[in-house]
Image 1 (spheres, rainbow, N blue to C red):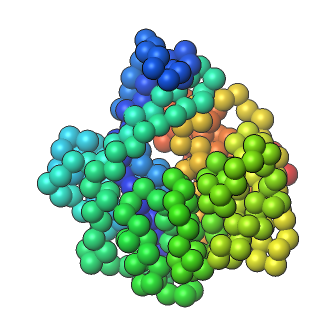
Image 2 (cartoon, rainbow, N blue to C red; image 1 turned 30 degrees about the vertical axis):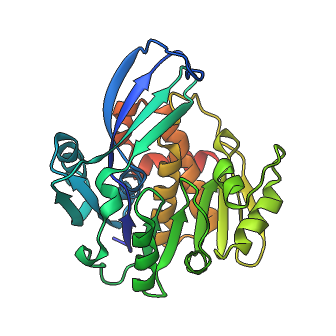
Amino acid sequence: MAGKILVLGSLHLDVIVHSSRLPKPEETLLGDKVSYRFGGKGGNQALAAAKIDVQVFMAGRIGTDNFGKQIYDTLSNQNINLDGLKMVDEATGMSVALIGYDGIYSAVVVSGVNQTIDLSEIALPDDLSVLVLQNEINTNANFDIVKKVPESTFVIFNAAPALTPNKDFFERIDLLIVNQLEAKMLINEESSIFNNFDALQKLQNLGPKEVIITLGADGYTGISKNGEIFSEPGIKVDVLSTHGAGDSFVGTLAAFICKGEPISVAAQYAQASSALHVKTPIDQREKILQADIEYMFSLNQ
C-alpha cells in the first residue's frame, strides 16, 4: 500500500432535505423526504481517499451524542486509522443540506466540537506523504499543524468555506483547491465576469505553489508551479445530487498524489470520482471502488 494521508478536518452528521427546489428568502416549502448521512468536509474527504490503495488517517473530534456514535460507526467500517479521532462530551458537528430536483444543493453548517480540536491530542503518522486540510475546523489547528509536518509532506488545502487568507499559512500550501465562489472571495473579486486565468494567478500570488479551481459540471482548471495552465472539461453524466462532489474530488486527488501521480493526472482521477459520485444514489456511494474510478478515468482518456 503506497503512502500515508492524514486528513485533519470536520466531522458532521448531515441532515439532508429533498424538495422540488431550493426555497426563496422568507419562503416555506414542503419537502419530499429527509435522510441522515455521514458528512463534514474532513470526513467526506477521508472516505473518498480510503477508496484508493493508500493508508488514510483521520484526525478530528466528535461528541458522545447519537450523532457522534453514528459518525464513529461509519468511519470504523472503512480502511481508516482513527487514532487521531477524539470523542468528547459536547455536541457533534452537523449540517442541514437542501437538495432540489435538479441536484443542486445549499447547506448550513454548525461546527460544534470541530472548533475545539487540540493538536496535542494528535500524533502525526511516520513518513506522512500528504496532509489534507479545510476550513470547517478552528483555524489555529490548521495553522499549527503545517508547522509540525515535515517539509517533505505535500499539503493540500481546500479553502472551504473561504476565509481571509493568511500569508504565512498559504506559503506552506503545496496545492490550494477552491470552487469559483471561494476563489472570488479569496481574491476579493466582485465582478460578475470570472476570468479563470486571472483568478488562478491571483490565487497563486497569495502563496500556494499550485492551484486548482473546480468548475462543477464544466470540469476544472489549474496552474502549476511554473505557471503552466492545465484544465479538463466536465464529464457528462446524469446528475442525481451534487452534495459532496467537491469532497470526493479532493479526497481522490489526495490519494492519487499519495500514489505518486502528478497533479494534472491526479485531478483527472478526481474528476472521474466526482462524476461517479453525482450520478450514484446517495445510499449507494459507499460501494464505489477504486476500480470503478479507474474505469471512468479510462473512458475519458
